[in-house]
Length: 271
Image (cartoon, rainbow, N blue to C red; front, side, top):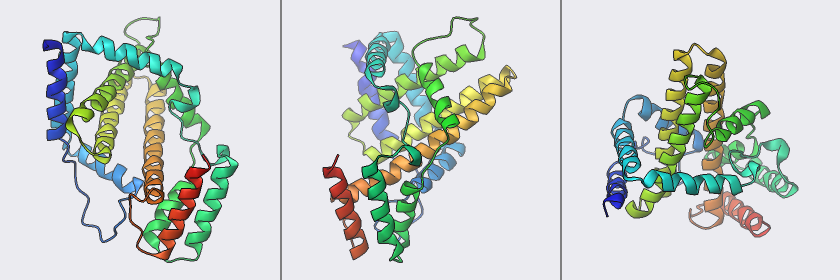
């Protein structure tokens, strides 16, 4: 029973610290855009508003390790990662790799907002349609992902070894949050914000390690990886808004949003 106590505690902590940092009052019925959410979380993280949560999570991570639970989470996560196709690990497809169905959907969405003055939905659609990310940035995210479960064979003090250890640590912490979220019943949006803050902490620690070793190449890689990650989070958040409109989870208030709903419904049916 003791080995399970850390998970119960983590679930309670997750629920306690899931209040987040609210955005300023919005007049729109639509959720904030991905850009607004990422900037909100980053600003709150920089102000230290996530410190208590992150410290508590780290404490429970260490307790889970002592209880032997980390090994089980580690092994399950490693197997899942090995079974996933490479394209599913870190990538969100940029414009040039989108399928014909996606391109058709995007053209229809643009046609809807071209004839509209609905600025809120237009910002979300523009962010989804014109999202792009460089192949170099994707390659760096893939490089970090590949370090999750295999430490380099060179000296323990190398930057690559430290980066690998951090990537593994934060991958496991992310899985622990998923497990704890089932018990706490926190909303998906609030959980997503916590994961953004957790990843910001990861990149900060990685950059600190690279600067300590004066490895400017790794510093540049980490900065590019953080930018790429935030770009992906913005896209994913915006696309989820459109999906939720299509699923009827977000009520439409005008003919433009109703057309968007129809397009997203038809897109979902074709996939």
